[in-house]
Amino acid sequence: MASVSDRVADGGVPAGPRRRRLAAAGVVVLVVGVLGVAVFAATRPDRARREAAGVVTDTAPEPAAGPTSATTPPPVGWSALPDSPLSKRTRPITAWTGTELVIWGGEGFTTDVCTLLDEGVSRCGDQARNDGAAFDPVTDTWRMLPPAPLSEDLGSWPTYRGAWTGEELVVWGGPDASGAAYDPEADTWRPIANGPLGPRTHFAMALVAGEHPEVVVAGGAAGSEGRPSVEVAAYDPATDSWRSLPDLPEGRVDPLVVHPHESPVLVLGGYAASDVAPDGNLRFPPALRLGATEWEELPAAPMGRVEAAVAVEDWVVVTGTDPRTPSDPAAVRAARLAPLSGTWTALAAPRDGVAADALWLLGDELLLAPEWGVGAPGTPVPRQVLGLDAVSGSSSTGWTELPQVGLFDGALDGVQGSAVVWTGIDLLVWGGGADGGYGADPVAVGARYRFADADADADADADADG
Image (cartoon, rainbow, N blue to C red):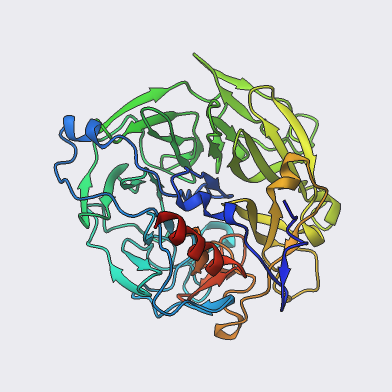
C-alpha cells in the first residue's frame, strides 16, 4: 500500500484509499483527546437485548452504513458546510451514526465573559451548552435535536461526556450526575438509570465494545472540592443498569479510556492527585490495564504525559509531551502500545513539535488535531495524518500535513476542541476554539474535506452493491 506522502493528488490534497471506508462500515473506532470526549464510528449491537429488557420498543429499520454520494458531490479538498442552527461552542459531544454527524453540548468559552475568582484568577465562559443538532452530509442539511431530559442549570463549566453505542448517544454527568440516551432513528431521548457515581467534571467516558457493550466512566474531579477520583463504573444500555468496576490505584483527572480490539480496557494519561514527586520532579501517572479484580500498571510510556490516544486494531496509538521542556520539538512524541504485552514502540513524531489535542482514525490513517506547536507565533498549526502502515512498522513514512481549511477567514485553522467525524468518504469538522488549552472564543462554522479518490471509491462501492 502506498504511504500517505506517496498518495498526493494535484494541489497537495492527499488521496484516500478504499480502506478509509472501514470506519463507516461497522467498525467501532474509539478516539479520545485530552478532555476525554469520545467519538465512535457506527456499528449496531444486538438490539434484541434492549427490547427484551424493555429499554427500547420501536422497531425502526437500521440506518444505512453511510452516505454514498451527494446529489452534487463536493469538490476535492475543503468546502464549507451550510450554516448550523447551533450557537458557537467548543468540545461538544460528537458522534457519527452512519448517516449523520450528531453534536450535543459543549462549552461557550469566551474571553469577553469572565468572572474574577479568588486570588486574582479569572474564569471565562458563558452558559455551557445543553442543546444539539444533526448534519446529514448527503442532503447537506441540519436539523435540531429535541431537548434532552437533563439539567438546564449547567453553570459556566461543562460537566457532561458522551459515547455512541451504535444505536444511541449516551450522555452522562452534569450537576446531578444524571444521564440520557438519544436515539437518532426515533429522534427521541430517554432518561437513563442513576448510577453509583456522584457529580464530577473532567472525567473519561468511552464505549467498551464486545458481546455486551458498556459505557465506562472513569476518574475525574469529584465533588465541590474537585478531588481526583478513583471511581470507575460501567453502564449497560441494553439493560439500563450500572455496575461498579475496581477503583483506580490513585485519583486521576482528565484520564483517557481506550478499548483496543479484543484487549482489556485501558486508562492512560490525565493528572494524578499530585503531579509532583517527593524529589520535586514532575510525576506522570502510568498506563493501566483492567485485570480480573484490579488495575494493572503497565510500563512507562516513552513520553512524559500521554495527551491523546486512539485504538488502532490491537494497538493503542498515543501522542504526548514532556512538560518539563515544552518549547523543545523533540519533547513531542508518538508511540504504539501493545496492551497485552505492555510493550511500547516509538513512532514518528508529529511534524514541527505539534502536540495533539485529539486523535481520530480515518480508515487507514490517523488524524492529529493540533493543540499547539513551536512554529512561528500566530501561525495556525495544520492538521496532520499518519498512515497505518507507519503504525504497523511496514513503512517509515512520517506525518503529512493536510491543507489549511482557508474558509471563514481562517476560523477553522488552528482551532482546538472541534467536532470531528469520518463518514467513510469525507472528514467533517465543525466548531472549536482558537485560544488557550480549552479552546476559547469558539466558532459555529464547519467544513468537509473530500480526499482525491473518494468519488471513485463511492462509485466502486455502488458497483459492488449492484
